[in-house]
Amino acid sequence: MPSSNSRCNKSLSECHVTLASPFFAQEHPVATFSFRPACAFPVWQPVAAVRPAMSAPWWQWVASTDSLTARLINAGGERRFRVRLLRQEVGMPRLDEAQALGIAPRRYAWLREVALCVGDSPWVVARSVAPLTQLQGQHLKRLGERSLGSWLFQQPDLVRGPIEASTCQPRFAYPQDDKARSRWGRRSVFQHGGLSLLVQEHFLTTMADDLGLPSR
Ligand SMILES: C=C(O[C@@H]1C=C(C(=O)O)C=C[C@H]1O)C(=O)O
Image (cartoon, rainbow, N blue to C red):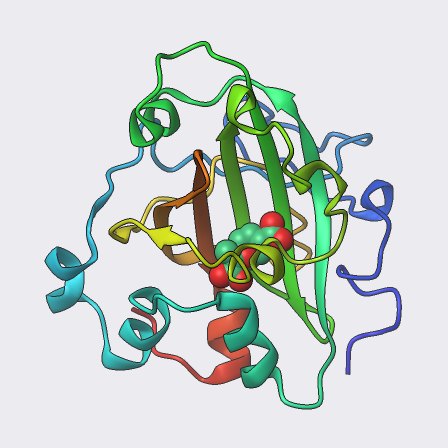
């Protein structure tokens, strides 16, 4: 059983890992995250288009349209579910994110990056983006370490757009003591009360190992 100071309980400053990015060739003593850019510009495809390359157990996760939070809690059984907030700030969405949201590039957005942990393992890392101009009245900024899904799936007018999938690695940093990598990434845009919210989730190898999921 991992120690109590495992990666999901460590403070962010304790998540000391080697930056594996080509831009950080050497161990970076003050670094807190690993970063492995595998796709400079990620390729997102409709989830149905990648189904032939995806095993049935993974399809149950990647193509599901209900709350991932609820699924993770259920799959974790007795193990504690935890949202680890990595970053939440106002910034610029990436080009593919702006395109997915249908907004012009270089428009300020609300950015949130989390690790969804079951027990001591980060199973999913996620990055959510919403245009800042659409956030009036939303309580997203005060979410903290409550799951975004716990709020989102309470909205009666919620509409989820089509799910797209990718095998690209996350382009944001997340704690990776055991060199966890993304097995599958997915994204979709949620609409609620004039808000468009892009949610991008990456299912990690730690989740595959803990659940005995196939490699793809
Ligand atoms: C959209 C959901 O919320 C989850 C929780 C997130 C968060 O807290 O930032 C981000 C992505 C999701 O995996 C969900 O549970 O389906």
